[in-house]
Image (cartoon, rainbow, N blue to C red; front, side, top):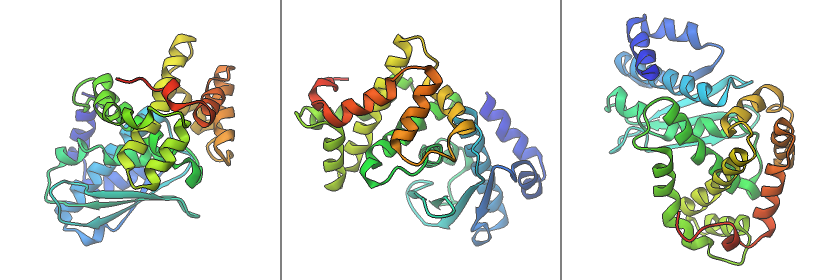
Length: 266
């Protein structure tokens, strides 16, 4: 319902001017001029909805989001997207504007890519963690926005379950994920990494701590711009709950056999 209201409000407003005024502190869009006026309005509405949904779940980002659009014909609204982590962090979307707004809103890509920017760049050695985080959070955002098809558990099971066989190993999960991604088996590496956050969420619940999305909202306010590496991030998250859940879990993923952490079935 909340998402529907956002879209209705956008449609009732004067499209381009109203969106620029309401979201100037949230994001800047580059590349709209490559599209017709009608498609500019559609894409602006989609981006505004995606940013608002992500901010609702993960908090207000301390930086302005730089979003780039490129036209690309495909059989889906957003065939490809990627995040750049240079001096000015940005997200680049390749879009087929022939699709209607609801197809864009229901596509997971924008939520995944924007989730990346809730954490600092952690380096290639921890891309399994960064991609696991974005994969895990895309469904949290979509659930909060009332657009997730099915339950969270079913969504994670359908994505993580098929890749568990790779983690039936004596190697640590982080090493398994790195090898999978090195062989370009990205789905297995991403969703294997996402299981880190499934376990973290379970431990937070058992210890009566606040959910992970709440901790990420706190993280945006206090630590996003100052943390430099994954160990900084773990310490920051642990500080919110006065517990060592995240640091200990990262140590397990770096040192413990994967088959001691991952189930045979999920």
